[in-house]
Image 1 (cartoon, rainbow, N blue to C red):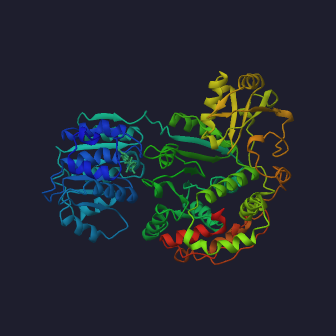
Image 2: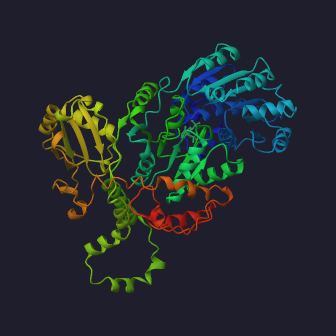
Image 3: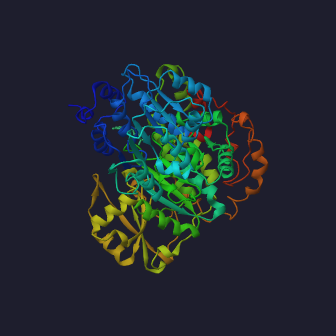
Length: 632
Ligand code: AMP
């Protein structure tokens, strides 16, 4: 029997969710659906977004609604327009095979008349933001007297956003004997009060541990000087060529500034915040959803409720003022069983905040090092190699050119061709990053004493599907040392650095003999004790097994840099910004920038941006892909 059918759902619904690719109910769905299907209970559920909570209340709700009637039987209240549209879309999908269903979204910023007309046609379920619903009630455009189910989604957020009075007004228009189902990511006192006021003996359900975040999220922080935040953001983006991220800023102004800088520097980015008109926000979201954008720079409020699949990174460019918002932010990634990374770019003074967040999400952060120029180049190089490997060749189109191409290249060996081919792109990044300074601020507190620490090299890395957490677990398990004796783990593509107290390092080196990982010999070497250790990529000979690259070139990477590189052009941005402030003209970047040095703040536009028109179609996606920066 289908697992959703086993929960008590009817065929029409099971068919619809099966088509959506739902195979197994999520834990919250397993707990909530049978309980709600009784149609007689109130519910308080502590659940993050991404747990499948919309279907958890949506599927039983549509089973209980009488779609033969045109009365409004359910009202779902949620904090933002985005979430409102999302829930409506989801419910419309679930009711695909149910005759006569009409689910209407009611939110601010769009014509109230149109929404009223939709409701008058007979909406059995109305999904609404509280402010607009209140307006509808004032205008007598909606009749809530037949409501049997009220759902409060992201209740904590609705209260945070000051909707308490609106909620009171709306619920007072509904019959006493209805069922109320409340979902909230956190359970502050105000939410508990609501649940007491509006519900009678609700069943209480927790999806995951109380207030804990999603276990599929890896939490990472970088410590840099405030002035280096932006270059750090770029390094993160550059060392994750397939990044699909939401970058959270604190204010609308900062959000716009960072987005403008990223756009100017050649990234597929845009801003989402409350100063944009509704149609501008819709446009940005559309581009993000269809992946024309790789980085969405957003404020908390604007990004609330966004359900976009496969967000790889949530980046806290600025930590949220309300620490609890961290959970909402990080919940944008690792949705529906996927994994994701939540990054905080902080300065020294904010380390304390990280400790507070760790307690909130009940997970440890790892302190990662901002990648240096060498590491960024390595990531880009391997991304390029993978792209070349996986590219779909249009045999027909290329065929007629091949004889001439072979002829042109006939004096080159296979190795030479490969080297030259990747260098056409790689050289640009090399040039850009060759003097890139180290952006990390040392946080001595983390190390018991620099003297007593040994740095180890291990020939395992991300290519072996390891991250800092799993690497720490692996080493501590094999060597039989406690994981907290490993001071730091810095995982690169094909290798990693581990720092451990000298005596622990001895044990690790002693036990890692004749050890294999996925059939490959694992090699660990000491890189010396802390005092004597130098960042000397390429000088050693220990890259042996994956010895790509030209040793002498590697020597070009100096972690010292010239000391200004990344900062030089900070002051110049205000002038540039102006030209992006006209939203309607966005995207028409036809300037061709010139490279003005090694500054990471400087314009990447040396990759000339013969721009696209920002339309959402796939053609433009393709165009963008063709931009030099993107192809690398
Ligand atoms: P939500 O927590 O409601 O925002 O849901 C997060 C995402 O998980 C949405 O994109 C849903 O479509 C998806 N989802 C919900 N339930 C399931 C399921 N049982 N199997 C697979 N995906 C699901």
